[in-house]
Length: 171
Image (cartoon, rainbow, N blue to C red; front, side, top):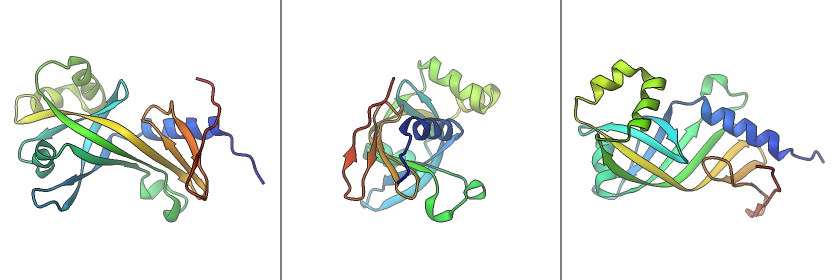
């Protein structure tokens, strides 16, 4: 039986999530029904930040229900196996933190998505949401599931019986 090198898988997770610029959002509408959408995002100090227009359905869903699941998922075109796409899902809460201040986050958006675009969006009806991951699961492939936090400080292999095994990792 091949021994899994947790540090290699952890680096794979960090490289994978660093390569993505949008996140899938699963919100709940006013009738309690699920609603799936996506948003561009940046990561800062262990949290995700999304910038949403007030005309977007998910803007109002998050205003009325702060619970949201987010998923980062490997592109179909680059996966070796559609049944084992790399993905990370997080149970989160979201808070509308407005459009004023938070310049470090807006600078990151400008670096990733173009500063001129962000400057223009800031003149419109957009608002910044801070998304706080509470718990997460990363799937690297078959038999490779891990209970994680966003920054991979927590990275525990999940066994077939559904229990996480803590791995000793160097920080």
